[in-house]
Structure formats: structure tokens, C-alpha cells
Image (cartoon, rainbow, N blue to C red; front, side):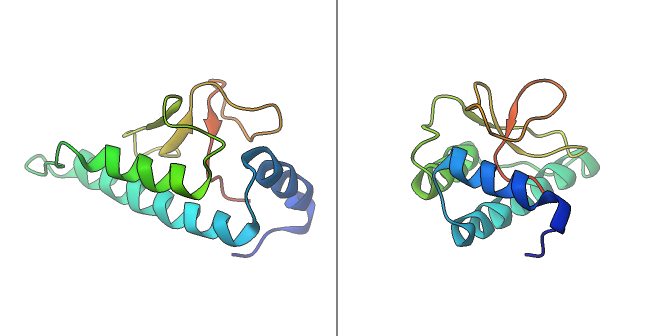
Length: 108
């Protein structure tokens, strides 16, 4: 993952807020991209259905990477126009969207 030099400070603060290393952040980005692909497919294809336990599995993967988040605040946003992995009550230095939700794996 390539980070722009003017975003390096935000990246460091975000990783510290999550309590993870940069290599773990790459794993979170892969899960984010996968969830966003599923959300896009769900929006574009009327016959596509996701399994009932799919979101629970993805949330367990994210919690296993960064247990500091916990599972109760973490959710998957199925709107393909934004980020998929979000936290309803984010830590202080976590990157946020305009709604105030914390974005777990933003693109820096």
C-alpha cells in the first residue's frame, strides 16, 4: 500500500487508535475491498443474495485483526458509494466520515 506523504501522520494516528501495525492495516484494506465488492454486486445485481452469516464472519475477521474495536460497535455498511467497515462509536484519533462514524480501513 502506498501512502501519500501528506497523509502519513493521519495513517500513524489511525493505526495507533486501532492498536495495530501497518501490515495488519493492509489485511483490513483487503477485507474492506472485498466487502465493498459485495456491496456493489448487491446493488447492481437484483438476483444476488449474500448468506445470512456473511457479515458476522467479516466482523469476526476484523475483530481478530484489531481486538481493540470490539464487535458491538463494528458494522458493515452495504452502500457501495462509501467505505464498508465502520464503527458507530470511534476512538478519538480514528479517521471519520461526515456522519461521525469511524472508518476502519480508509484509503490514505
